[in-house]
Image (tube, rainbow, N blue to C red; front, side, top):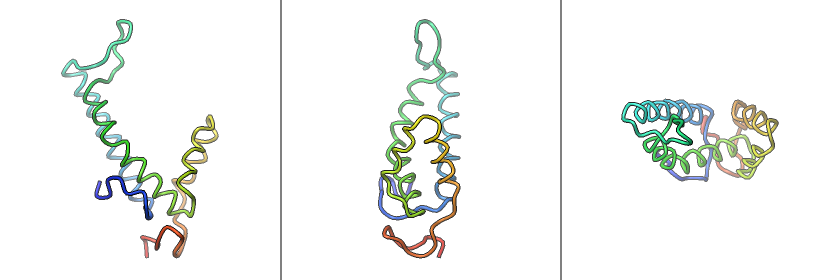
Length: 117
């Protein structure tokens, strides 16, 4: 969260996956709190499982999540616009997952120096 909406530069695998891990933990905690406090949204009499706390949290971390994702793409030498590959059903998500697991591009690229070095 130090680089809240910084889309420039590069982000290592560790930075991206640690953000992802803690984000998922906080999402689950927000959903549990929504259920315990009775704040869940209902649709046709059925609880959706999430409510106001989850919604507020998701809105608060949307831009930082997008920023770290774009910086991770930059780290591999790819443009942030490659984010839209995820719109291709199934295949796009698999491609992005593979890219997020790849190692950094060695040396300097047009988005900066390698954070590992």
